[in-house]
Length: 219
Ligand SMILES: *Cc1c(COP(=O)(O)O)cnc(C)c1O
Image (cartoon, rainbow, N blue to C red; front, side, top):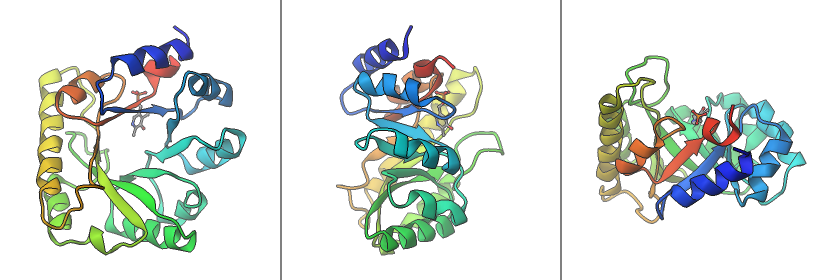
């Protein structure tokens, strides 16, 4: 199926309240425009250089989400325009995003990345570290970022029960943090989990945002 058809079909299949991020890393501007013409406006990229190169060539009303590993020294390149940074995996990075958002006189929305997978290679705070971070009220001291929720990636495995357990762990953490007195619930409302192979499971376990690449772009 074409990119256009994939977007139409996917959007129709998502429940109300679940946002679609089209992960367009490695994809051409033409492929992105095909998704755009099917009505897609939120796109995700995982490399600063690639995102900075694509952004000026594509429509201004695209909301760019950054979903990859972000080095603190590269925040400045995307801070002027990025809509959301989903992959905040250290307090130092959070500080740096806040600082550059301040320089640009804007607010950047962020998600805190939580490590839920069995694989060591994945990034993020452990669930305990994440809970402590919010209990200590750290995030609320940053004036130029809005903490909008959590992001996580499940283990790459065909064991769907294991994947489900990981998503469930993340949902529980999300609910715990949302109910803390220091959390601004009007902002903290997004739980980004689910990719091409596991987004249905993620939605069953309470995802509000799925990040899909392969199932849209066929590669
Ligand atoms: C590439 C990527 C995705 C999309 O993965 P697919 O399996 O192609 O849907 C989602 N999230 C992150 C962080 C990614 O890097």
